[in-house]
Image (tube, rainbow, N blue to C red; front, side, top):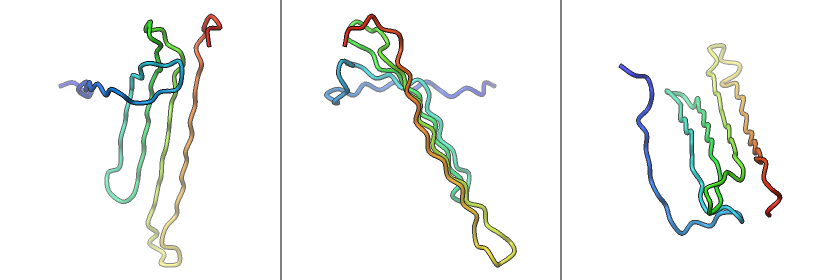
Length: 95
């Protein structure tokens, strides 16, 4: 049995995108949390122009971890992280 997730495809039209992008393709999406408030998100996508050239790609990571303490002195320990990374691809200077 394969561990890969099924591919989902959905087209959403009339959504404003930053110029000169005409299309956004989400290439990776991960959700998490298995009880408590543990959480995770990873979203990776690429913006394309009208000729289907990649303009730039972006990655968004978010996470939260709550751990209940058994000591009674401290009810929870929280650590959270949020990061966004955008990479512009090499273009011929057409902006």
